[in-house]
Image 1 (tube, rainbow, N blue to C red):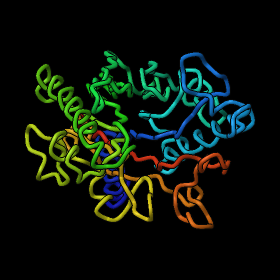
Image 2: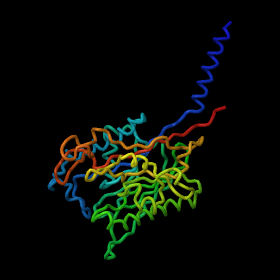
Image 3: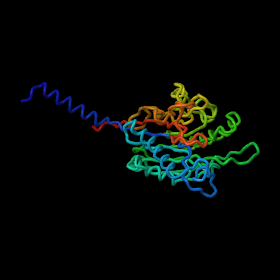
Image 4: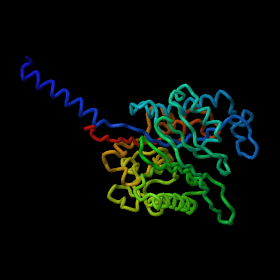
Amino acid sequence: MMSSLIKCAIAVAMMTTVLSCSTGVEQRVVGFYNLENLFDTIDAPNVRDEEFTPESEKQWDANRYQRKLQNMASVIAGIGAAEGVGAPDVMGLSEMENRGVLEDLIATDRLKAFDYRIIHQDSPDERGIDVALIYRSGVFKPEVVNFVPLLIKDEEGNRIYTRDHLVVSGNLDGEKIHFIVNHWPSRYGGKERSIPLRRAAAERTRSLVDSIHAEEKDARIVVMGDLNDDPVDVSVKKYLRAGVTPQEAGSDSLFNATAPLFFEGRGTLCYRDFWNLFDQIIVTPNLMKPESGHHYIVKTEIYDKQYLRQQEGDYSGYPYRTFVGDWYHGGYSDHFASYIVLKKKKGFLF
């Protein structure tokens, strides 16, 4: 006969096991990374890629290209390792030349085991760079993909050819979720002068959010990308309507999940000793609520490990870049990656 004490211990152990199984939590990582000019070495017709060829001032050859691929892969895998998941489940990407470089990227030793798939289309961008999404095929199942052009003009009325918006709707662990990947127009020519271009991009992004909500009232949406503006800038706050605190994100608004990091003085790129946080992740407020059966954000982070920083010189602490001008550094990117961690509580099994 077992003593009552032993019986009690067994009962507690059994209950603990049942509870841990029935309330198990699945963790997913979603991130964004600006790859800073991931070009192959081939001079393609109708693409402004001449500076990334072996004959250029940059002397962009196979060895440098392979090192760039390995560096990019180490960052993506590093994000997953930091969160104990091997690799991110979904990554928005910008500044790649074509699908081929993405195929080379996911085939690297660091990433090939994760069975990434690619969503990409050549944009009309005058620099020849695009946006894309890679995802782990066993986790996310895309259902609808749209590449939406941004139609903007310069002061003379000529079209400015820039990156498309990428909208991917699909199934993440049995739940519908929508991703909008952006790379808004740069501050080339000055921040103030280029504001109208990013305002137009913000309005386009907002229209995509509204279109999704018109079809699906409680849609769960993740907007991510290099916005070339900070969370407090007018394009993001006023025209995208992304609040910098959860309280500001009303029923028709969005919450900028990366804004709290900006207010801590952190950023994803540095210019003249000032940290900007251009690489943002912005979500519908329902992704902030820990509701049973739904994904919700438990962490927002910038992947800014020490090895990704310039170690010495005038730019010590800045992101460790591949090039500064035509001077080859052999680094990573002029941007750090940003990411969110999602969890999904399962319901009880009994």
